[in-house]
Length: 323
Ligand code: GDP
Image 1 (cartoon, rainbow, N blue to C red):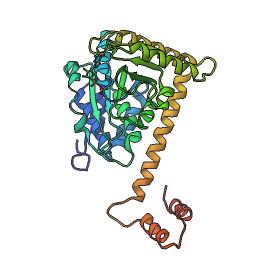
Image 2: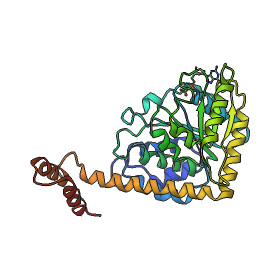
Image 3: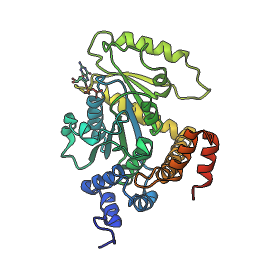
């Protein structure tokens, strides 16, 4: 079916096949997200009624702590329960690197032939909206494709971990002994975002020490009445020890989210962030046309010349922007 523009995909067909579990169509739709394709509007409209079922689990922690190994083990545990699993590996710290760096998550090959597992790494390829724009849309693709659980693994570190955690229903924070980062060095933000804390590499000395430190730090955090009390679970990711317990805790947290009303709260906050990211990105696109001189260029020159202050310039820019 021709859609006018050359190379334009057959969106209804792609969506239908993705919903039926065709992995290539799922991959193609996520590529459209990565490429910020103009067809995304149609894709998202077609997906909207079919999303909202998947439980989104964010996995964060310093490089080398065992995120990739743990994700792999968790996929196995969830598959044992008969769940369809999506894995989205994102690198928020290098939006311009492209997906190639993430492409060789070799241990994931364990599940490469399993039709009930979708594994995808993603970078935002320098698109103006960045990851806060792209990741929720990729998650919606996996969700509509029937994933029961989607694991979002962050690769790289930084404040953006917190951003990714904001996209999850349940956030797992991984720590490990002997990494030189301990809890003290773990950013304070990390201690606020965890719903479950996993002390991986507990085959090594120091795991109990990490647990003690973590316990006392979590005890200091103020929690509202009825708030979730984060679990602390020890694992050895490469043997799978403790991983079933993590899967059970994730399920328990999901139950709590639903019962407490927090699931709705988190998802509404997430949708709000997503809508905001799309709106802001679309404004930026209008302002930063690389091929043409824009209103913004003109205003910038007047600011440099001292004939206009930046606040007045911003007001003019907004006033001149069509909605
Ligand atoms: P990531 O950078 O956080 O994704 O960490 P990886 O999953 O790549 O793991 C980093 C290294 O730690 C690899 O060599 C793993 O084999 C190893 N590793 C992962 N989990 C464990 C564990 O529980 N115990 C031990 N001893 N090594 C582990």
